[in-house]
Image (cartoon, rainbow, N blue to C red; front, side, top):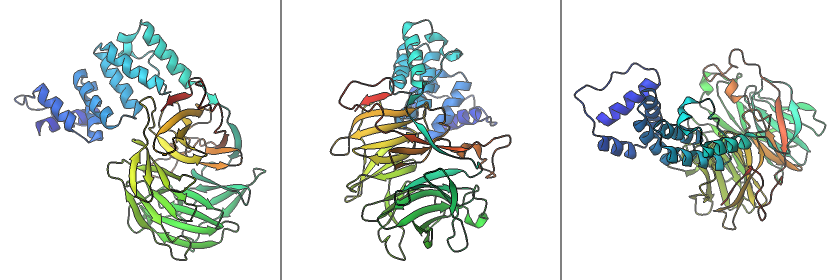
Length: 465
C-alpha cells in the first residue's frame, strides 16, 4: 500500500497537484519498491509516477518505472525515448545508446540536440550517428500527390470511401453530419444531409458495398456534432443508404451507451464488422441484407486498449484490427480467435489510425509516431507473420494528423490533415486562436519503392520481419 501511495504522490506532483510527502517514518525498501513496480499494470499511474520522479530528479525510480511501462507498452516510442533520457541522466551510456539505436532503426525521429538531459552522451561518434539517423528518418519520403482539397474548413472530416460505380469519393463530416461527394473533376456536392428520418449524428465512418448498392455509415453524438443535443452524448448509430441516390434505407441504434463506432469493414458476403473505440469490442451485423439488421457483439478483446481501425483480407477469413497502443492483431472469423501479428523488434506499430488490405499486404496509417507515415506490411501465407515492411510515404508536408484512407483508382487516398486536435473536447468548437485549413486528400502509391525481394530502400525501410 505504501508503495502505491508513493507512486500516486509522484504522479500527483507531476500533474501539479498538492500532495503530501510520505510520512518521515515510512521507509521503503528498494527491492520492495522494484517488485511493486514490476507487478503494476496501470500504465497511467506508472507514467505519472515516472514524470514525478523526473521532476524530483529521482532518476533511478524514473528508470525502473519506465522499464515497466515499456514492457507493458513496447510500441509507445515517446515513453521509450523518455527511458533513454533516464539512462542518460544516470550516465548509463550503453543502455541509453541501445534504446536510442532501436528507435532510430524503427524509422522514428527525435531531436536530442540542445536537450541538456542528453549531455552525457554528446562528444561520442555513436551519438552523432544516432542523431544523423533521426534526421534522415525525419526527411520526407514518397511520391504522394494531391488528389483534391476540401476548401470548407469547419467540417472535421474523418471518414472517406470510394464509390467505384459512381466514380467519386464520399467523405463524412463530424460537425454537420453531412456526407459529401467529390467527383472526378473535384467538384464537391452535398450528397446526404442529416434529417429526422435518417437520424445522422456526427459521421465517423463510411463503407461502400457496391455489390449490393449500399453505403454504410456510422455516426455518434459527440460534442463536435453541433446539430445534436445532450441526450445524444455517447450514442452511436449505424445507417444504410442507397449508394446511387442517397435514399435512406435504415438506421439502427447501438444498444447501450457510451459507444463510439469508429470504423466499418464490409465482408464479401455482405456482413458488417464495426469497431467500438470506447471498449475493445467488435460488433457484427450478420443479417445486413435484411430490412431490420441486428447489431450484436462479435468479439471482446480483453487486454486491448482501444480499437481504431478494421479491415478484411480478400478471402474474407481474417479480420485485422489496429490497437492504438498495442499494434496490429488479426481475428480468425471462423474461430473468433484473436492473435498478434508476429514481427521483429525493429518494427514499431504504435499510433495506427487506419488500416486497409492491398494485394497480400496491409496498408497502415501511423499518426501516433514521428515522423507520421504510411506503411505497407506484407504478410506470409498464414497471414499471421510479417515478411516485409516499408514506408511508402513518410513525413509528407501535408501530414498533420493523417487519419482515414481508402483504396481507389491507382492508389490509397488519405485524409492528410484531420482537425481532430484543433477542437476543444470540452466545448466541441475550434480552440481559440486556431486557424483551420482546408482538408487535403493525398493519393499515395502503395507500390512506391516497394521491393520485398531486393535490397532495402533508404531509411524508409523498417524491417525484414
